[in-house]
Length: 319
Image (cartoon, rainbow, N blue to C red; front, side, top):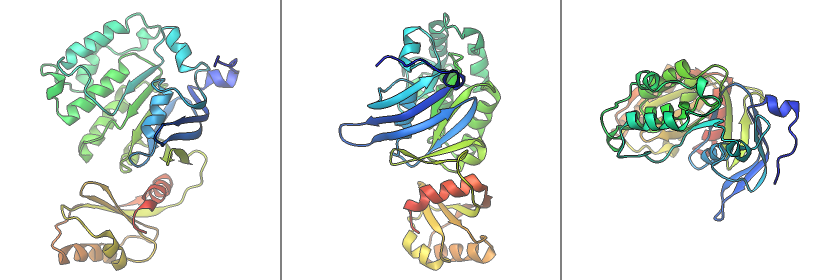
């Protein structure tokens, strides 16, 4: 379908999604997504399989929507491609690009590929990206560690110098410090006038990203921090190698708490009443009685956005 004439409002927005739908033959996908993005960072959060990757891949022009419309600065992704313009830089979640090549060779290849791009003057140099992301340039990509691979993917997304940057689960597989380090690098190298979309299923990442938050649930927008009132809550997180019985733990705690295993061995408990010493002692005693060792205990007050998103996404856990 040909593009409709763009309005001044359309061209001023980096991304506009209008009733965007993509349905897979076997079910799932995204449904009636209506979102606008200007300069700045937006975190797309949701549980695995919620539709985050589908949304980002559709925005990037890698998937064709079933219905609805998406425009980038007033034009469809396909229109930009036909013009030879690189409007979006993308780091996808899966795969290892060119596994037999070295990171240096891949970045050199991409540098030459984008050399004629209209936004080439905005693009970082290969040497800058290698240094900023501390890339291992001598080993092949197939031998990179998880953290090294994630840093390389982020570097490739920045190589075009595109005004829109999409990072799909860039911290997947990283430990908490590795996630914080990667976000710190991104904050220092991504131009401030870029539009950056970052997806994650790790809610603790939101404290580091500190941005607009959009929650996707069952393929639809369930929450948008710029359009929703906020609340507040407290959260206790801890690590245990023991497979905890969340129903039994819930019975030992006050009413109104929500408990979930956020990633393997990492547990999160949210509560509207303050989490005090007695609350923590109850959790520790419960774990001690079943022989479960506990480490990395953290208690924090959630800002309004964090509280709302935790309540929405962890609501599928024990409540």
